[in-house]
Image (cartoon, rainbow, N blue to C red; front, top):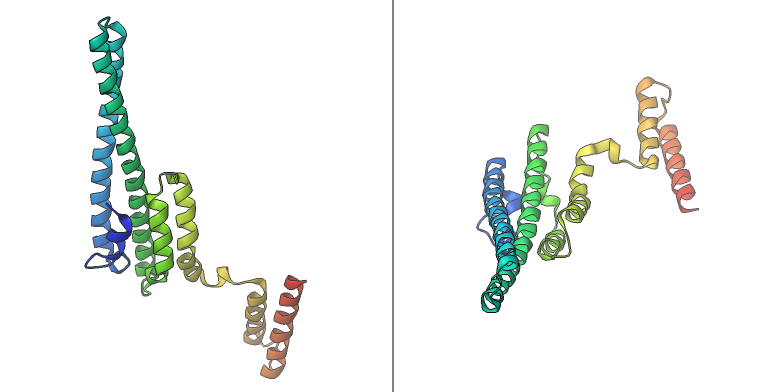
Length: 201
């Protein structure tokens, strides 16, 4: 399965699916992953059996045949292991998108999944299809790419120190410490400028 094609060329894009639809995709990927895992495990056992038979076998022709079988199963095992790596990353992506959807639905806002840009989807597709990118590294990259949605949901927690000074000024206005809106604006503007200047220095 080419994940990028699957992600972008479906009748309904992954980012527009409901929680239930995303969960269905997650279950399908989990089933496929488990089947691959069972096949890889079986091949490992088959190879062990072939190796033990070859160690006991003294006939050169039979040993040669067993060595060929061992080599074939190793090739198949490597191919399936690559597919297993890809399937694991696909499942991780769908799971994370489902969690984002659930968080957005719980908060009563429209889904933040649309914030995953086409460029991000391309990056994800390349990372998924790269054998060199294992699940742990992929999870780090996935977290980076999807962090935008999390930052938007965090609200004030994602503000810089300069932005927080504006909130402080508004709080002072709410408490009656600052009553003149022009004076309050000047204080907020001065504070933000000073923070930004200090950051650039």
